[in-house]
Amino acid sequence: MSAPARGWDTLARIIRERRWQLGIPSQEAAAARAGVSPNTWHRLESGAQVGPRMVHRAATALDLDPGQLWAVVDGQPPAAEIAGVLPVDRPALVYLATDGRVVQLDRDDLTTMTPRERALCAALLDHARHQLDQTSTPSLPATPTGIDHEEDPNA
Image (cartoon, rainbow, N blue to C red; front, side, top):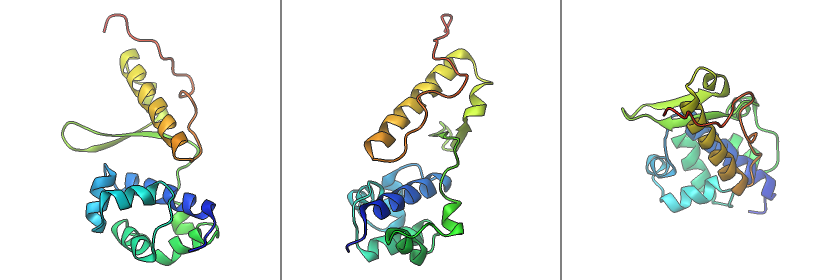
């Protein structure tokens, strides 16, 4: 497997985004769905080279076409079906609610929150940005536009 590193990084981003879109809350849950070890799934989402069998299992688990994923690994631009998996310019905060639902908030949703809720969500977005920076993916803006980090003194 002599595919360019950029192809593996793009594949990792597609896999991670698709997992989030499907509401699979963790790499461990995705690994179980694909029938692979959590360590192997982590390698995939980190941009490490994995074998064809792993790419096929991940594609099947995430309802993607394995051939299109391999094209990305080979450095081709993502096909339209896969390009739709990649996030748009606007990052979202995805979290697991106490009732087990996966909830996604766009930055626009933060404007309707109390100052304390905004501060907590902004901190989570900053943490997500830091995590993405660590995995060599494009970073999120430091803070959502128009959102301050001030804590509610009455909270």
